[in-house]
Length: 394
Image (cartoon, rainbow, N blue to C red):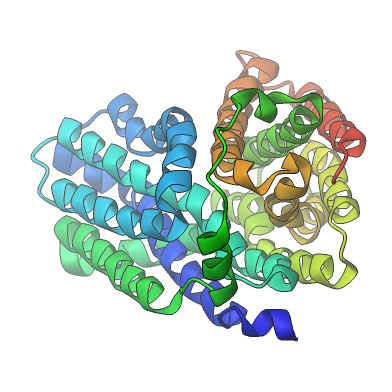
């Protein structure tokens, strides 16, 4: 196809960016599986140690909008390479941290790199991949957090036991830098984009009011709800299952099974959207199942529990790639995309925060109101689906 020849190989670009993103996400998820050892080494209590993960969400809320503005000014590729340098600096500081406070600061620096990649990864796909392959490429790219969480969870304990604390921090940082170099070599500006850029008129000033129009707000509400329901399952599904007698390891596996199955649903939904030329029906289908699946995973065991996890993974987790690829059609103006992505990631961080904040309130002090909690989250899921249904894709 003529258009595609003006761009690089979309599969190669998507895979290279996925490897880089996975290396960054692995650094985020290197802590939970060795948290006990880190607490002892740094003489940290549970409250302070919790910030080793919470700081990532906090940094995301604070820096999402500024990162979008920086991406617009410097371009997504430059921001991705900057993320590698930042995460290397943060990891180096963390590797030789003398106490818990310095380690938390180092994690905050790593969090800056994480939000850079979260926002600029989709922007890079939009810019460097042929238009008719954006869905497929985004479907591959969208796996970076899922794969990073798996690699971090599986590899870190072994690496920690053989190389120690410093080894884990340094090795993961080196991997991120190596993959960043590969991104620098492989991901190139397409000739068409360069030609258009040379002929482009002076950039008009963006009115931030354009990002809070009713149609865009409906889209953002849907994504907010998606993240709330997902975090409800990831954060509290294991607690419910263990209360019902499910073995801890199995409960952890079932609650993360949707993320693992995203390896199938994300590329599949992306490819389908390219083939059909439509994204809204697929996104609606994905979002529609999130509420009922959350209800099931917070209230049921046995076959229903497994069915809920599988459907959420194979259908619901196709939602993020549809969100990322359809967002530009809701914004309506390409020049809004960089700042708009910052807004979208701010909504993602807020949704994850609200999901972990609301569920304990619904469960009550004795952590027993699971049916009530599941019903509320299911209703929220349907509200998000309704908001998306009302949203117009241009």
